[in-house]
Length: 424
Ligand code: HEC
Image (cartoon, rainbow, N blue to C red; front, side, top):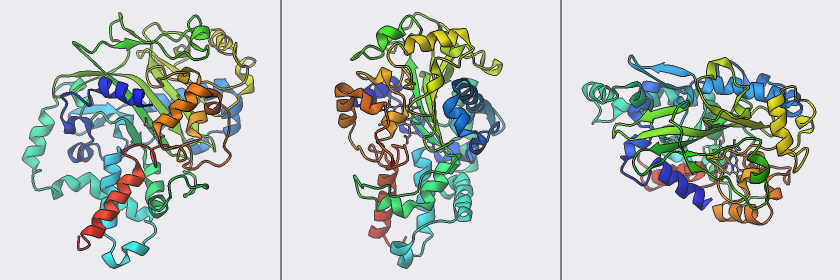
């Protein structure tokens, strides 16, 4: 996992010359974007979990509909557009909203305060959309000047920053309603500290690759020919500097004139107990896993995989689509029922090419070190594919308790700030 972080760090130039504000969703960007836009074609609550887990064709069709929404352009302000998924909350947004809500609790009541109501959270979101005007250095004139810097459509795409993990409003609501349980949750607790996320919750993880001198765009081939070899034990995804023109994928150019391409993107969506997992990755060769994409996404050369359960009986039998069936036959030379979904641009490390998202995410909230995940991947990857848990500590989401920027830590920092400066 450490190598994943280093890889992303290099790819995103987070360790390079980009300024902090070019990477983050700033308060000015949020003022323009306003609250996150939800899926508009489908309610996650309305999707049949039986069909999702028993009919892979249906699962792929649903996943594509969600991707159609997420990759649709939305107009923000007068002058430009971003992709819908870019409107979702970054961790910094969540921290600012939590800080605002917490600051409103009278200091004498803070230690006993348990939750926020839906209405309070809604009002805090509205406040956050306007919070820019509470900061002395932002004036109408300065905001206008800042906005004018984003001149081309590609530059406008960089306006929300290059955030890696983004959350929809359902996620925000749930963690704010349960903030006290999150803050007080001891590390390695045996039982989940908070109730499961409600249906409708969704999270995105992106992989933006920088391209330019010294930053070649990598290309990973995932087709019938490469799969049997890639799926052998102890291999990993093998990328090569691309000889293809960077076409058919989402591009952004930031104000420092660096160019980034969205080569991979993960979605986890709470449709049923085990969530729907789906991932897109760039493949200029247009291999089978992209061929069933809807017409509205035909200009994108993204492949897609999805899973919604640990095992799926219909993988070989229920496919009418010949090219997809060929692909799954190659995949199922190893196992006929275990599900698979792994993004070559994101899931790095030995044996991670064979995983299926939820098998690894079942340990979220329980494992706190990347090193431990890497050890399981090296020694017994089946533990990260088959179901080993029946109770899910943080309901399949790592963001709550894992990593330097985790939500629990962000919230604890806010609380301890107010303990130190109680008059604020
Ligand atoms: C080997 C373990 C592993 C596998 C396999 C894996 N993930 Fe993750 N995932 C993680 C870890 C650890 C994090 C948290 C750190 C980070 O963001 O990199 C994470 C973070 C995420 C997040 C961000 C938010 C959160 O709270 O969990 C999403 C969304 C996500 N993964 C989706 C997926 C999808 C979709 C797949 C399959 C295509 C997948 N993951 C496969 C380990 C894994």
